[in-house]
Amino acid sequence: MNYYEALQWIHSREKFKVKPGLNRMKWMMERLGHPEKKITSIHIAGTNGKGSTLTFLRNLLQKQGYAVGSFTSPYITRFNERISINGIQIDDEELAELVLDIKPLAEQLADTVWGEPTEFEVITAMAILYFSRHSLDFALFEAGLGGRLDSTNIIQPVLSIITNIGLDHMGILGDSYEQIAYEKAGIIKEETPVITGAERDDVMQVINQKAAKQQAPVFMFGKSFTSTHLKSVQNGECFSFTTSDYEVSTLFSRLKGEHQIKNASLALYAMELLKAADFIMDRDYYETGIESTFWPARFEKVSEQPQIILDGAHNQEGTTALIKTMMKHYNDNRIIIMYAALRDKPVEEMLTQLKGIADELWVTQFDFPKAMKAEEISQLISHNRLYVRMNYKRALEEIRQTMNESDVLLITGSLYFISEIRKNFE
Image 1 (tube, rainbow, N blue to C red):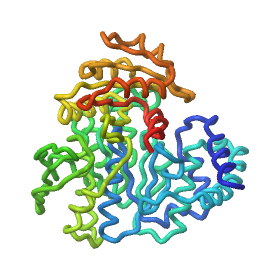
Image 2 (tube, rainbow, N blue to C red):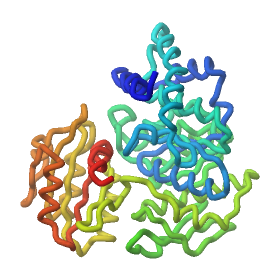
Image 3 (cartoon, rainbow, N blue to C red):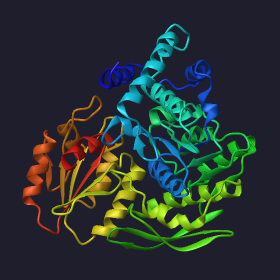
């Protein structure tokens, strides 16, 4: 089996959609000799900020000299990004070999009461197996959907992190903050510390209840540790970080937005907890760990002239953070927004938010099963300078030709759209 055949088989699992539950993962792990027990893992769940927090933590750990595996989703440029070691994505040959290991198990599962595994379950199993075969110090796992019944919840982490909790994937996770928090809090394991960036009282009540049942200590942003935004500069954010026994007065993050300072702080406190658990951590490397962190499609400037920014804000909380960052860095510029989205998102609400900062609003579409048509999107919003284009590539060229040096183009919406359009800038 070659790489392209392997990818084709993985993507064929898409037809099995989302099937919450851990029985298929347990079955596969048992037949693979429990590779999940051979790795030292850290589990990250939440609505927004999972990928950024994981990447901050990976860079911090790498600066200490540790070998670190990362499992993330979705990918931005290439599928292999989802499984990496020290930021280097799995090579094509090893990916194909992993499929050869997992495919027979998937076929055997078809004959059980649980049925064939989904695409995400297959990729999760591949990542666990891959990490178990390499001499890693840590493996970082980003939960896919929710947490409690997510396929990544098969791992037994030394530490859990729950970023913020927002209203997303409500058709699967529930339509209230409490219900969604219950699913995310499902990653909390017995006597395993949990760090959280959640702010709402109702959400914290759910997290604390679950942690109490598991006798897991909870460390909350704003109480156990905190950060202060010092200033926004052209290339990022300056901030300080404080715990009860440690303080660093100035850190610099290349990831723009105050929400990224919070994500960096979650990662920094994870380092402090690992240090307290007798892992060797030198605080002198924290500064370079934060500063070296880069995460594509998170307020990423892909063109300087004209100024073009990509951001995969795909829910209301993410859009709120994006708007705040735009106002902080580009309040004096004319802002043009290009937008495309998937059907299962609160598109009307997000467009209403974006409309408030857009001098021009361009809606478009892309080739993806759940993508909305540009005409459909246009019917959800009114704007005195609204442009509807079915071909996003032509729209991009059209916009570029009208931009002057002080204009800024923000391309946002679905992360799958951002992944597609980013190819034009590589």
